[in-house]
Length: 453
Image (cartoon, one colour):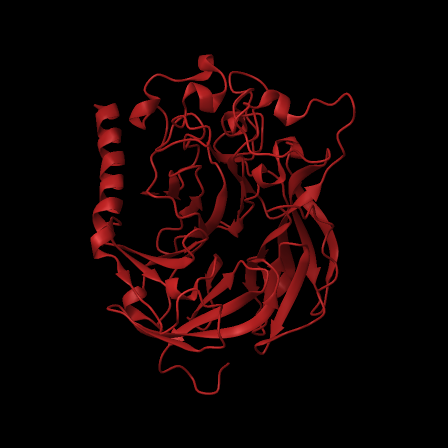
């Protein structure tokens, strides 16, 4: 009965997503097709809200994350390795000093940013990033030797990277006393291609004051065991930090109440496992539960409400197909027939937790936010997710019991890859566009304060 109930839940989840397609509201500003981002503002009228989109600033290069300082300034990370600040709506042309050296190749680099819950007292700023690792030596075994043949290439020149989180002190102008508080125990090399490397390292503080860190594993094999030759097998490897959500104290130490503390063979920092590539993470302000969205290969993009100790299935089970052409969890996808689990074609395996939502087709979800402000009363409690693939912002509505009832697509006509979305202290929504000429956008009521740019 447990199997049948879980399968029914999965099919209901898929059916809701597919069935809502006809009911999805799409809001367009008056812009010609394929236009680049104009100067704005852009006015929208939808069944849920009238709003306008203001271009706060341009000149950002692949911005990834943002944090709002108490004085109203906004810190923004740029993937190539720069930290920028926006003061009074103006982007300072000089990057902030003190950022650690990053591995800025492909889709890797400087990623997320978060302020300490006690920032007013300690001024701590946290940065997640891909740290350069040691070059591969002549006797080192690259990932491509262990991974299936059907992986993305071409291989690189023997460089490696490591997921890391650094903490520094903000003095109003620069970061000082910067040091790593977490470094992954898994080194990823470029033998399977720069674009194929693990890239999602989101960070967020929970209501419990703990730091939640996501680590990707779209391609990295397990260190050992039955998934040592599987693309993404590290996500099922309890001795690897990759393909997990980790839970840390603010100083990087391990909380005693983590779900795998004291369990032999498991890293004690693991909170969940079986995660592929998390690009959005936020805390539900009503329940305190941490949510994330993650990119699958072809289809199988997921929105997940995290359960401590849960396994979310990558790469042994999922919906859709791997890039090899095989079903997720199939023998070609895993690279080893002996690693295949019976029942993977049903989208269910015992011990695997199901997501809240599966996007079919995949949207490449990114930034994630819960709206709690007063600017848009009908949006209270709604979830906002950025889409890189379809270049839009998605609004997800839940009913009183927390079930999915409606989705609305916003900003599609702007044709911008949405990397991050956050609610600002003013109750407006702020959006970062993942472009060579990236921008910060502000979504505000049409009757917003006059004179804002």
